[in-house]
Image 1 (cartoon, rainbow, N blue to C red):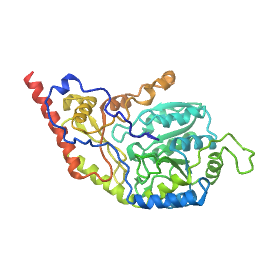
Image 2 (cartoon, rainbow, N blue to C red; image 1 turned 135 degrees about the vertical axis):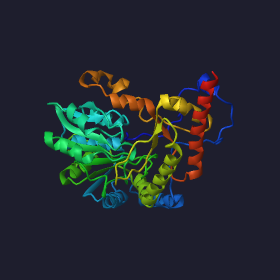
Image 3 (tube, helix red, strand yellow; image 1 turned 180 degrees about the vertical axis):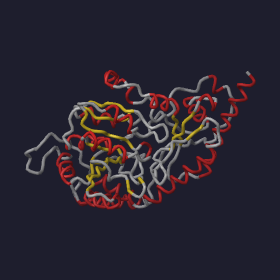
Image 4 (cartoon, rainbow, N blue to C red; image 1 turned 30 degrees about the vertical axis):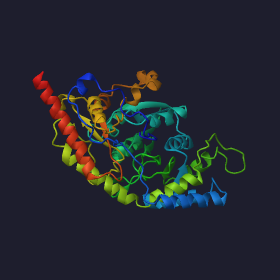
Length: 407
């Protein structure tokens, strides 16, 4: 999920069907387009100066800017260690390798494919669990049912920035003697009660790619309170070489460059304000869309905070009158970019169909994947733009209802 998803060049899928285009001819609300995501930097000129300083230093990797980023991120998250890496995917691969996980790893299917890819690249077998129908995060009950004699770890995802039920997942892991990791790609700045996401389980791994809250252009952060695991990940990101070229284990080239770290350092400033703004925009979407029949929002636990890395709605076709794909196509005609996170779910992808025999049915994942539609939300959007998107959705539903009555 979540790990390193980014904005594609062709976001709207197949062209509008005759049934939808026939509803009404209109000029688009957003003739220049409204993107689903857009990175935001408060001081681009300051970033340029920081990059010039890095280039002038002659130190492009394994340098002081990465160390500064690690220290400041660890302080923000309240954890013992942050290890900067080239991507969230590489970070997930490293923590599984450095924790010496064997056998099967329980993962959600309602996530970005990189969650499962990190498992498979380690020669481990992903076993898919179902999700909670309200939060869309891994169901601890489903995870418990999927555990077998081969299981070595659970890897859950803070979907769209919504914190998992970390306490119950930890109980399940402890009961069975398993490692617990979190794909926290979306969750830098999320909170579980009064605790920052980052300090739960054995390790949590964040993404710093362009659609995330903290941006390094590309990159990731491993957060952990395990001294040994942090030390192993630092060696592992440099091929498993501790400095004497006698590699202790098979590692990766997963270093973050000084240039990427400089961008991330600039992005770290103002992160709280950006998260607060995203929550205000999410609230504005709720104000407009919660009264609309057939539209609902994933829930965030009482006292928790989501980053709202993505603003996703669930579309009940019977009550709304259109399916989520059809609504996405109608919004495209208005210049509104959307996504279908996460459809198809990972367990149905061609890369993982061979694992069907080790998985039971995932009825909630399957149902939710049919309903999901992600709407534009980014720092710098206005509440007026949010309201226009919401009103467009209301109008599209009304037009479909009128068309059905006239048929």
